[in-house]
Length: 272
Picture 1 (cartoon, rainbow, N blue to C red):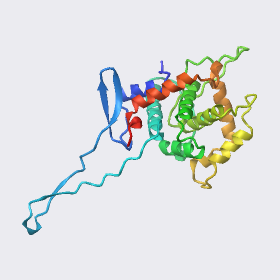
Picture 2: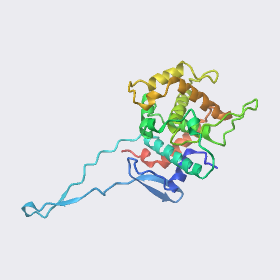
Picture 3: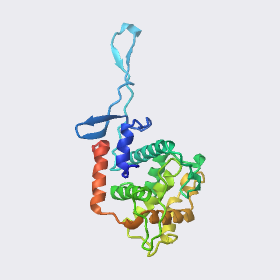
Picture 4: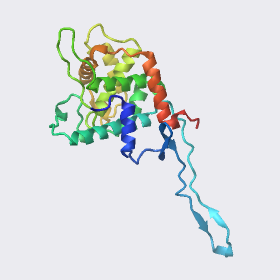
C-alpha cells in the first residue's frame, strides 16, 4: 500500500537513494539513533591552491571562489516542498512500473503536457508569490495535507446517499503542478474563510485567484495557460476527493506536520 503521508514517502525515497543532485544546497544523509535528517554540508571540492612561480615566490595563493551568503530560508521553503513532491512522484513512478495498470494520465483534468511543464520549484515559488502566502507555513502545510487526503486510497469518499467520489490521481510528473495549485487555492480559501455555500467553485473568489495568477502578462508563462474555468473544475474535483472529512483539518495536525517538516529539513530551522 502506498504510504499516506508525504513526509513518510519522502523518508522512504531518501532511503531508496532517490534524491536528485540539482538541489541548491549540497546535502548529506545523516542517520542517527532514532532520526533521519538532511544536513547542509560545506563543499570544499572547488577550493584550490595556486602556486605562482613568477619572481621565484613559493607562497601558495588561495583562489577559493567567493561564497555567496546563503539566504535565510522560510519554514516549508518552496525548495523543500518541491523536493518532497518530486521524490513522491518518483516513488509513485517506480511503484507504477511494478504494476500492469494502463496509464490514463492524459485523461485527467490535472494533466499537463511535457512541453508546457515548468520547473517545479520555480512554479511553487511563483504560486506563493502571486497568491501572497510565501511566509505562511500554516497554509503550506494545509496544502500538502489536502493533496495527501485527496490522493490517498485510505480516504473514505462515500457520500451520505452511498455514492462514491473518485480520488485525485497519484502524484506524478504530469499532474503535480495542477494538483499543487488546486490544493494551495483550497487551503487559502479554507484558511481565509472563503468557502462557498455549496460545492460550486466557479465564483467571484475563484476569479480573484485566477486574476492574481495572471497578473504578469507573459504569454509563455505556464501559469498563464491555466484558465479560471479550469481552476474552478479542479477545485470542485479535489473537494469531492477529500471525502467525508472534507476541508476540515485540526490545528494540532497542522502544527505536528510543520514540526516534523522542520525536523526533516533541518536547514529551515537554522539561522543563516
